[in-house]
Image 1 (cartoon, rainbow, N blue to C red):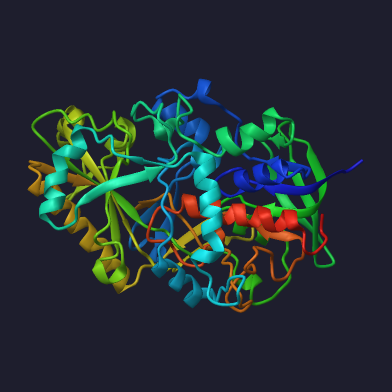
Image 2 (cartoon, rainbow, N blue to C red; image 1 turned 90 degrees about the horizontal axis):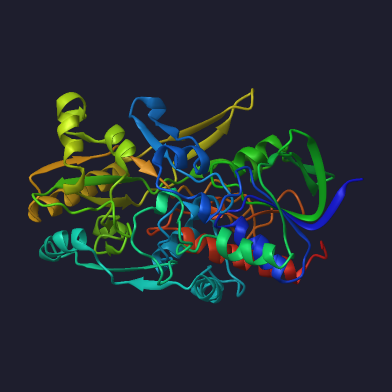
Length: 480
C-alpha cells in the first residue's frame, strides 16, 4: 500500500529543513527525504578529507564560457541539514536594493499587490532569528585584529557579523566539517531535531528522489530509492522540492513538467555570488584556522555602484583545500613554492570576498540524465570581481603581509534557478512558491531567489521557507 502524508519535502537544508520542521510543529504529517546521511555532532571531527567525503557534495564545476574562461567551484552540503551543517552560519537580511532587483527580474509582488519587500518577509526573519538564536559576534581573534586597521585606513571598516551560533561556540574553526559541539544552529539540530525528538516528523536519509509524480497537472507524491536500493512511492497533498539550487531544477526537469514559458526557465538564471579567498603571509602566527571563520565583515562596497562586493574576515581553508587551490599571478602554486607556502600555514590570514553577479548561469540535464553547469560573466561582473581581488590584496598589503596568494572562483551561495515571481513569463513559481504549471508542487530553497543577494543568503532562504510553511499550513487551496 502506498503511504500518504500531508506534505513530502525533498531536501533538508536551509529551505527544506525549515519547511518540514515548521509544518510538523503545526501538526501536519510530513515526510522529509534527504539524499545524504543523518550524522550528528558525535560524528563531526576535524578530519578534512573524511568530512568532505561524508558531508559534502563532490566538488562540482560550472564552466565559464564553455570552459575557455575557467571554472567556478560549486561547494555544497550533502547530509541532513544540507549546507547549514557545514557553513559558517552568517545571518544577514536582504537589503532594500536586493528586493528592487527581485522585482525587476520577475515582477514579484507581495501580499498588498505592490513590489515584494520587507513587510512580506520581516516577520519570517524575526521568527527564524529567534529560533536560531542569532547574535552578534564581537569575539574577534588575533587574525581579525591584524587586518582591522588596514580596513579602517581604506575607508571600509570591519563590523561584527550576526550569526546563528550560540554562546558555547569555542571558535575551534571546525565549521566546514560540522560543528562538534552543536553551537552552530543548523536546520538539523534545530528544526529537524526538535520535531524528530517529539515524534512529529518522519525523516528518511540516504533516500534518492527520482521524480515528482505528476498526473493531470497536479503533483501527487514522489518516487524515491531508499537506503536499501528499493524504489518506493509516497503520496502527498503537496510536494515541496528543496533539494538545492543545483539539484532542484534537475529533479523538476526529470519529472516531466508541462511545456510552458515558466517551465522553460527551470535551470536558467543561475546566480553564483562568486567568491574567492585571498591570503596574506605575516611574520607572526595568526592561527586563522582556529577562529570562528567569519566574525567580521566590510560592507562599504556592498552595492553595485560602490563596487559590488562584500569582504568577510578572517578565514582559511584546511590544509588539503589550501594546498590544492592556492595560486598567484603566475598560476597555481606547485613544487618548492607550494612547500614553502604550506610551511607557513599558521601565519597566513585569509579574507573571503563575494561579488554581486547577474544570474547569467544555467543548470542543464543531458539526454542521459547527466548534469552540467554553465557560467557567463559580463563586463560589469568581471569588473566587480577584479575590483574585489584588487581591494583585498591592497588590504592585506597595508596590514603588513609579505606575500599574497588566492584561490580561483568558487561559490557556496548559488541561487535563482527556479525564480519566484508574479509573472509566469519570467518565473518558475508564483510568489507563494507554487509551480505555475503544476498544482500542489512547490519549491522551497535558494533556487526561488529571483536575483542573487548581495549578502550571505542562508537566513533569507530560511525566512522564505518559514513563509512557505505558513502558507501551506493555512492551506488556502485545500490541498492538505
